[in-house]
Image 1 (tube, rainbow, N blue to C red):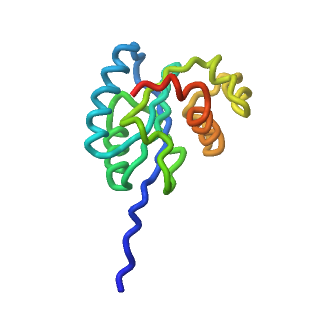
Image 2 (image 1 turned 180 degrees about the vertical axis):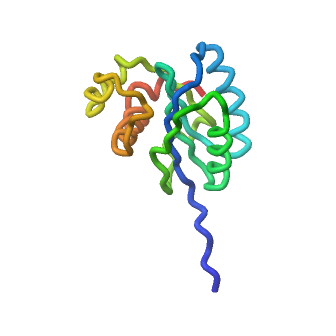
Length: 151
């Protein structure tokens, strides 16, 4: 008997440095285009942009998420990309958004417990480790920023 393939979703989280500054209206247009594309692929998640860095959560079918991640990594708007988390999930944290966008200041990031020292030292999102990435994810999943996500 052939084992049934695992069809659970994955969550992939990465951080990257933007290769240029983005105006808020550019981010909204980028989000709208990504949202339409991700909706067709049944990919959900959120994008955080702060001080020239991206932090993105992609949730969905493993193949679809990997294909999208490869496309993003080939995008010239990203540099110094680092995959922070990739794990199977039973439930999506951002299931309501084809892609939510949060623009947050360093001061706001410094208010997250267990991350205040990290952002207080001027560290960039691309320097996050898996533990700090999960702390940041939890803050967005449960905290005040969840209400500010656009998507």
